[in-house]
Amino acid sequence: MPGVSGPSDYSQEPPRHPCLKINAKASIHTHIHTEPFNAEPPRSALISSYVTHVDFFYKRSHGPIPILDNIDRYCVSISGLIEKPKDIYMTDVWKLPKYNVTATLQCAGNRRTAMSKTRTVKGVGWDVSAVGNAVWGGAKLADVLELIDIRNCTSTTPLGGKHVEFVSVDKCKEENGGPYKASIPLSQASNPEADVLLAYEMNGEPLNRDHGYPLRVIVPGIIGARSVKWLDSINIIAEECQGFFMQKDYKMFPPSVDWDNIDWSTRRPQMDFPVQCAICSLEDVDVVKPGKITIKGYAASGGGRGIERVDVSIDGGKTWVEASRYQKAIIPYIADHASSDKWAWVLFEAKADISQSTEIVAKAVDTAANVQPENVGVIWNLRGILNTSWHRVHVRVGHSNM
Ligand SMILES: Nc1nc2c(c(=O)[nH]1)N[C@H]1C(S)=C(S)[C@@H](COP(=O)(O)O)O[C@H]1N2
Ligand SMILES: [Mo]
Image (cartoon, helix red, strand yellow):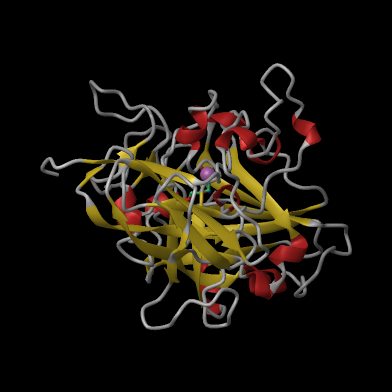
């Protein structure tokens, strides 16, 4: 594709913040990454601000990070089941109305490490920080589709197109060296209210290489895997994308399915994200002094559903108190209200008195009254996705120096 030059290996990686915890193998002796770069910040970084700093935003890639530096020649070709295929250049995207959408991106594998403690799962291990909240700036996909004569809120093109496939520049081993790709329904892609973006900015700055420079898709409210980075082309297709990450990964199976009896075709690609929350003010190994502690974390749900409530327990789930919720300073958070960011997480906070070692628990409820499951065992699945079980942190009360 035009404008592409870059590594087919891992030798030209962008600079990253040293606080990130890398969740992939790297060669110890040469310091050269031999695996895609996957990293998350410490828990505390997530609650330091409502909008996550780019440095602290988790990075999840399936191949080497491409270098796309010829911005004048960079274009996205749109083709498939449409009458007029077209190449869209950055100048075309910049000309469209710009929207800033505050949206939380969460990897379906967030909290996988905890799930693998029940029974081994396959996939990159993550603590609770494979999630972040950013202000994404860009054009609405619905407006881009209008450039090829697809009107707003269309579910089928005259040629039978029903899905919008995003194909990237980066190449990954799961696709046998082919590009990363995913699709969403045309009805969602062409609906301006769904806020699907072709984003060129993150928190007011041009996207950096890790997050998809120069252009990525942001699909609010669904698992991060569909928000394709380094966009190369868009195909209007009849059936959903047949790529690895849609058909052989990121599907939710019941606990009875294992590698010897799995039939991928029985399940749909996971899209929506269930209600989730995690405590970020405490690590699993923390020793705290007896007395007042502050329990802080994030809560988020899929589909634009707000967070109705976050319950916190300091006795392992026997009794609960309600945490306060907030997004922006000054404006009180009201779930599903026009003043709230519907695609974004809420942060929560509760104070409690602790006198002995205990288990602190948090669970969130969304506006559809969906609640997180109590135990990880009942949602265990072989790929270790969507661990949304109650988040539990063991704290030890001690008098030692912390
Ligand atoms: N081109 C491309 N897009 C991609 C991926 C990828 O490997 N390649 N990973 C996906 C996954 S699984 C997630 S969770 C998000 C992570 O986005 P981030 O690195 O900006 O946090 O990007 C998605 N888009
Ligand atoms: Mo992901």
